[in-house]
Image (cartoon, rainbow, N blue to C red):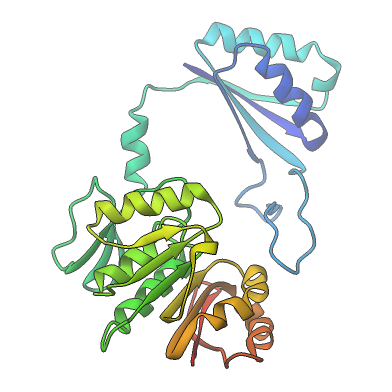
Length: 294
């Protein structure tokens, strides 16, 4: 296989991609040509911030072809088009055959939550010091243990397992990792809910693989009170859910919220003030964990 690499302005990306698709391209990827420089441009917005741009000012387009002849011919055809005037050829190079599965797996190593609590992909052996292990592979649903918000929630579960987590609700369960973590720390009655049916299915499968018993479903299946309510979502939906989540916490119970940036702490405190007193319990890489006792 050979890769055709092009440098293109934002206004040319859409038509260039369409042209490549008509030229028997195997795959196309687009990335910020100024990544890792002072001109790097973020495209992902955050709640309360201005809407992000719909494209980078300069993009590197990588098109994969079956052989060098196909890549060269594609460049010749594109160069003759008027929209290609502002584009630049960066090169055509051979791409070695790789074991993509093994390469992808190599990017995911075991994740330490506490010295004896680890998230371990199925293709890795657990570390010798691991006493509590959740087996979880990257999938369609959010939550593999690599994100700071997930790690903080799991660390809270491990540190509060004694005297016990009681009945647990994982609201917005994603992969089910928080519910599974609670199960690993002896929680017996666990409900995991999500608005995405794919997340519910992922939770079922991951729980079974970890020998954790729980109930997973859509949010309308939630009923009663819980000793521990976990919600790792984002600040805006957490604010909207303030009355619902607070109502689910039993007297003497704990509310644990994550997916919150440090600068959003006051917003959450204000939103939950009618129901409880939230405070920051942990912080990591610009994210915070907020909790409240009822």
